[in-house]
Image 1 (cartoon, rainbow, N blue to C red):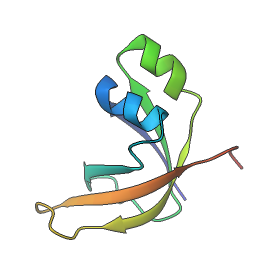
Image 2: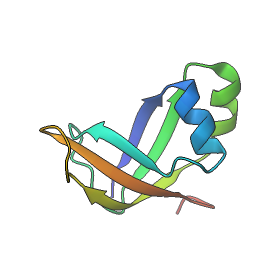
Image 3: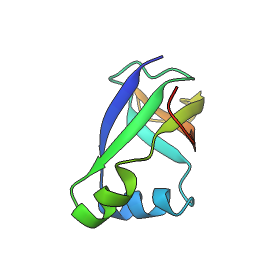
Image 4: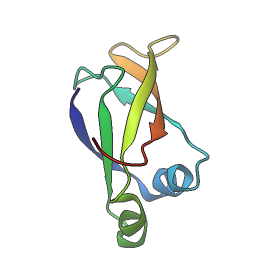
Length: 82
């Protein structure tokens, strides 16, 4: 299990904070795996204050219909870090 620190644009961060965006489309340059943990940092300080204390666990990964070296992963917010 790895911890991935990722940047996120504020428009996407708001959707994630509100539970409407449980997925990411990303370049697979970090060797993402199911079970890895994702932590986001946003340049918008208001959104960052709300997302900075949240951690997400990757629960599904696919590369179906994606550009080369891109994946889609689904994640679930974790209640606590273990």
